[in-house]
Length: 115
Length: 113
Image (cartoon, rainbow over all chains, first blue to last red; front, side, top):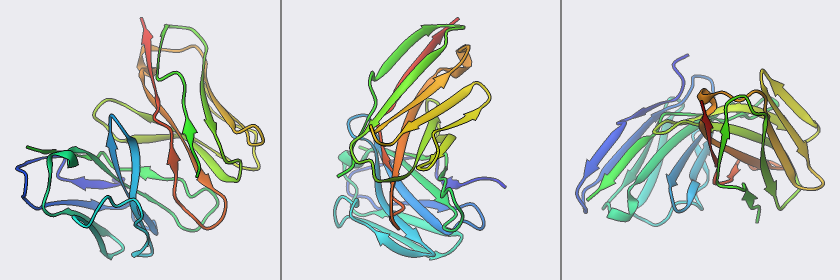
């Protein structure tokens, strides 16, 4: 398996622009997670889905952020409009919903820079 | 609210030394605890996962222990190598149906040749 796939790997955009980050989870995994990592705050969970349904979006910082999972193999995280403080590395992770461990597997991340 | 603490934030050791990385958490009602490794500019790689009913897990030179009642976990690295240099994060998953992990901020390890 190729693991969790994220695109783009790097994104540089100007303040006010829309940014869309993409994620393809590991095939067969039912849960998908979006995280944000910064030096100041560490790794924070933004939202997670079980079977394509958003379960907990309490970590989404504000209405400028939205996430969708239209099917089991694809999810997007959108920021509109983007701001410099959104600059961070955004990770997607997936895990099997069933099974004992619920171990999470992370993608390589998207490094977002908003100028 | 669960809080996960990893102290110190950074550690530098000479090659060959055995070392212990610490992780503490405030709420003992956990489902499991996971240790990750993160290399600079890369994603997280899962190293070991310990279920709440387990005391330890081993993989090669790595051994992770869990003392749920005291809210502590340790990651033991035997015979450290320069290739072990990375940031090590621990994360706990609460008991119940919640799948959210709470992460510590990590310990950045440097193993000097």
